[in-house]
Image (cartoon, rainbow, N blue to C red; front, side, top):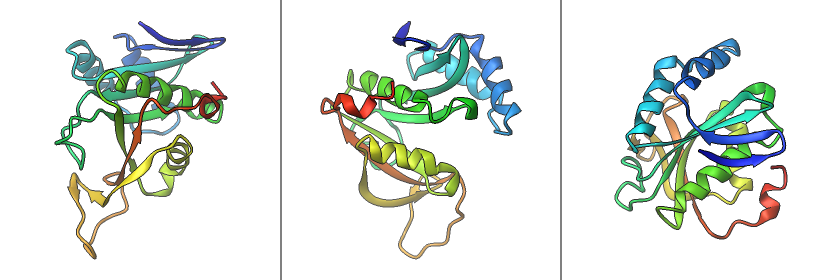
Amino acid sequence: MDYYNKEELIIRSMLERDSQILAEAFSAQGWDKPVSLFEKYYRRQESDEHLVCIAEVKNQLAGYVTLLPETSAGPFSSLKIPEIVDLNVLMDYQMDGVGSALLYCAEMLAGQFSDTVSLAVGLHYGYGAAQRLYVKKGYIPDGSGVWYQGSQLEQYADCVNDDELVLYLSKQLGQQENHHYNRL
């Protein structure tokens, strides 16, 4: 299914063959995204546990995002709010609007389940581009502070600034303005 199709950018649901291609492409740029991760996403998509959007630019895979219709962890777990999970764009396609388009599609899909969408973003510098993107697109912190390894981190608690140290953000849907996505 195509979710978005504009000029040279297509965003569609995941195909089984995408797993190997994505794993190889992310490995080539030094990112640890094993084929088993994408095979899991595909299986979960096929069982309606996850929605997976794949970005193609000029018929080349450029990135992906997944959406949980209801998050099962974090501060939104009891509120039945969808969660955007694992948005990644290959380096050759960054700063070209691919991440914005993926985020937009995930938000449109989330709107089928709720008027709010959530996500968690890492806090180390590797997530700097994502942090900026989410703020520019209207996401705000939920106020629960920092979470580490799936639990709310207590004040003054020790932690490691790794991928498990996150801040949860949310956004009210239906209020997107087209100028937020002018790079699509």
